[in-house]
Image (cartoon, rainbow, N blue to C red):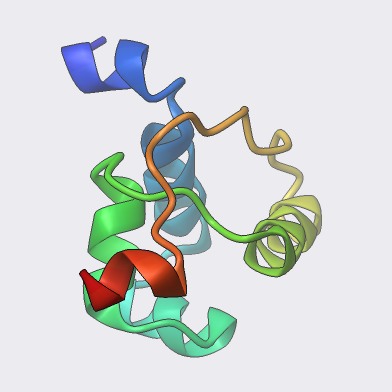
Length: 85
């Protein structure tokens, strides 16, 4: 377990493992969830948390491949206000 796994609660590791179990790339996963590859990288790297809709979609995908639900994510979550500064 790396330092970021501890700090960010393992969400990025979970997401990477889910994508791996599905056998698809970050770009393919992003297309299925409607997010950019860059955002996917930030999520997997533990730099961002998903919004509630994206988290629900990812958990539904996990159910389809008999995978555990997502752990809590404690990484910072950017808002529109954060992008203006």
